[in-house]
Length: 477
Image 1 (cartoon, helix red, strand yellow):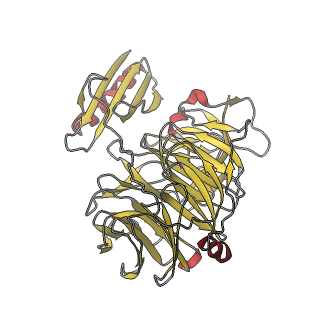
Image 2 (cartoon, one colour; image 1 turned 180 degrees about the horizontal axis):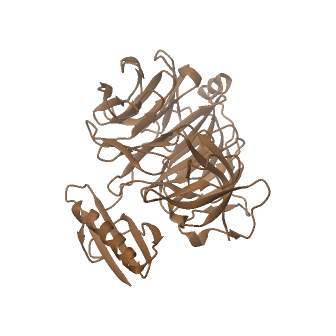
Image 3 (spheres, helix red, strand yellow; image 1 turned 90 degrees about the vertical axis):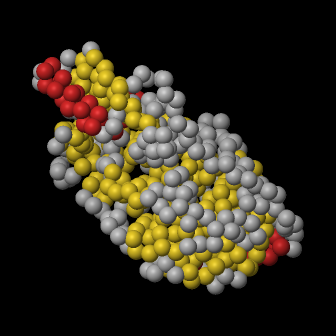
């Protein structure tokens, strides 16, 4: 058995990654990722040992031509991943928001998503919890690193983490659906029809398709890109210099608008994007032209923002533990204290405003007119402190093939998929009747084994001509 270990590390803060090739008889194993991390592993089997050696030599040659060089594993230290450090001052407002319930996750929380059935919250410790709208904790997912953000694409849920991966949380077995390039330090992400858009510390925008393959990248005009939102017409990217709209294929810049201060958060509605900035404002920008249509002024740096449907009301959370509500045109309707840290993300739904805060809490605020009026007069409900259930279901991410359960037969109604070699790449195709066998299936790379078959609860066609899995993943053996 022979192993070749290569690294590519650039002094300017760019690439910092490794590539390892091991040949054991007819088997070639490739391991790659960020320096200091376990990385991803892919294994291929060849008809003869000579062909395995030739394939390995080809892979190594390709990497050397790209700048990789032989290295000793462990001598070069891992590059630190940015942990968002934010200051949070006490609110100067005496009146406190009418909080219905509060769930303390135990670590600062950035990720939030509220859908028809659940409230999702992800924290810096790598925990993601799902709760009912009434506050009952339903399940816990444990990911390998801190959660930067949570985003949904139809009914698939994704968590962007500090380990450079994006995990699919749509089944009981979370898996890494996307493995971002080792030189990309995720700040924020969005997913639209299976295409991942990543904004990073260097101010860049990176776009990756459903097969975890790089599509295009653009450098930003500034740094620290905390905003990315996407739809059919453009990708909206915010950094220290403002907001830029790029065509979906990355071919052209549609518009750029400078903002009052660095962009710290972004939100979108059908016809407008909202940029919260360090200069105490939220801008509403036309998606078509980039023109500033309205400005919503706060009293401190804006860490988060959101709207009610159609942008009728605009909400903002600032660095001084306060939350605001404005009408569409920019008139401030109210300002209240959160009662527990600054809101790092927020979402409005059905007259409730959900916040995740610097103290790691998911907070449900009654944002109805009657409740806010009462709060301004000093009358608020007693917030219920949500506790974890003793027998809370906990699901851990699948990081290797060994973590997948094996079944001897496919249960009735399930779908069988197969790992195949296609054009030099390892793909997943559907074997069961009634599906297009040429379409690729979005599937965790960490657990793919050439020739293996897997059972999933269901697959769904997605725009762009590929399938997504839904439900548990089991190996058929």
